[in-house]
Amino acid sequence: MRNVSYDDVIKLRKDVDRLFSLRLHFHDYCEGHLFTIEKCDENVKAFVTDFFEKRGMKVFFKDDVSFYVD
Image 1: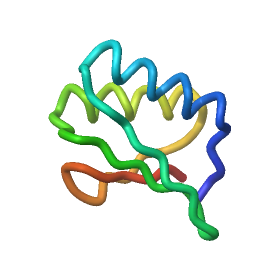
Image 2: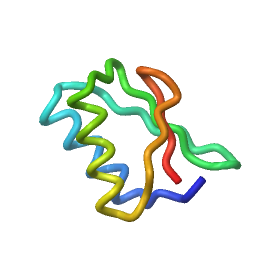
Image 3: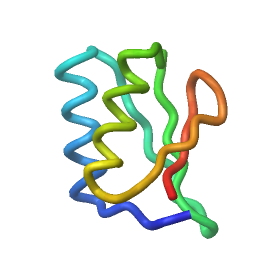
Image 4: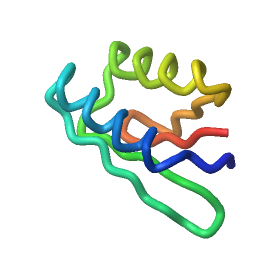
């Protein structure tokens, strides 16, 4: 898993809150970062995917509420 900058995490959290009124949670583990979100529909998934693709990272959704980037 690729490390995500804290600036990107802050921006993504603010954008998700502003655009979708959802809370994005960031979990920092030894092996990488995991994100969870209250409710992740196709619009949210597309936004998150685009956000990270612009930064050269790929998003992997584990289920409808969690994902990691690489």
